[in-house]
Length: 190
Image (cartoon, rainbow, N blue to C red; front, side, top):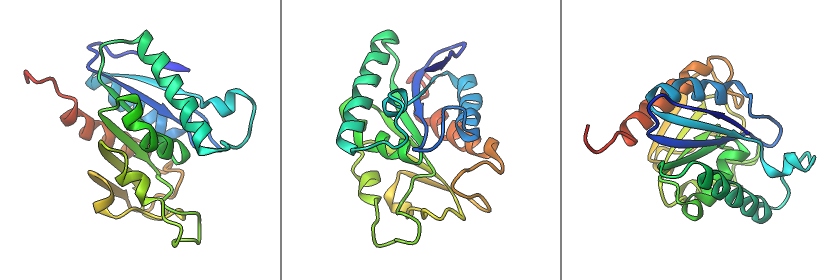
């Protein structure tokens, strides 16, 4: 787990990777770089299946249980900060599915895999709509996993020319997240 502190902490953003990536993915680093200046304490977390040495996430039920426990432990060590959780690809799915259980106030979904490549009939839009909190989706316009509809999220940002990896211009990803969270997580006195 990598934790990057903010000078004036206003919220905790817990981010995780996709099923094949790691916490140093370019888009996750760009989000960290854009969010810490606006008060986000950013925890980039290796998912429990990876810590066990597994290559694939396995059962969504077990993945979600492990994530919920991990976030609870993290919140015990960083109490008092409002929680936003998110991730890229598979990590975005986990963040959506567990948002209400972890007490998250919002979800950041990067490269949300709407469906398996070439199988648009197997939509996962229900995970976005079922998060129970506001969800920001940042997707590449050329993502073979599909791009959600605007109605599936509180805010949808589609980056033209980007694929699923969101690595052509990761700074645009960070800017989109910081803009959204900067408004959402502003203290009530501002």
